[in-house]
Image (cartoon, rainbow, N blue to C red; front, side, top):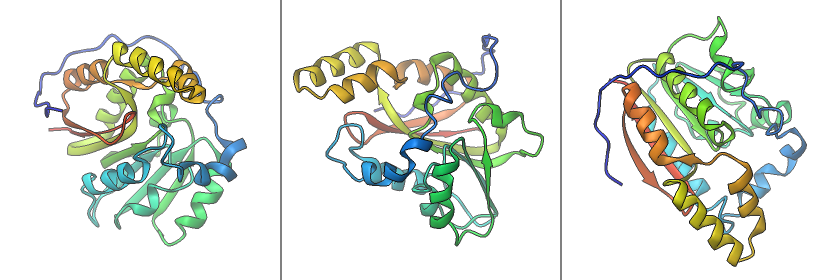
Length: 237
């Protein structure tokens, strides 16, 4: 997919709603924390295909150095955290206490890791949150509605220093037509859990999100890892 190179900044008229994302409680993975890592190992499943490769790509594209301050949104059981290079500070955010119990063990060697139990939208309102060189997130933003995604991108922009980078890895479709095509395909192959996820969750619409990122001012590139998994590398000039 072609690399986007734009710097025009347009003011968005964001809808008024509480900063806490609408479906945060619904997508709190506490009940499934103990099974999560076993689940993501099944990369034969369309939802998990490309999972490991995408996490490795995020860690590489994040361009983290020893002096970097890194914000990780939706840290889960620490599968991305443990891949990140040494840095000045790693702030990991998730709403799931049970997932963090697992992540804390995996990441016990990272002495400068700080965990915040919070929603990935409301966390930006905290007074103890500074600016960062890098923001990373994996398989989390698809829990935000489309209006929430637009606000999220602006919050990420504001949290980054100049020349900072944001690396997103998640479940995405090219556009709404592609989404309907995917639903039809997985209905025919009787993969009903994938159909349910496409209908009930908020997979990124790449066309819509690209317009939002471009209008805010990000320069970005997109890479595909499977039928439903993509990575976006975005830089704040």
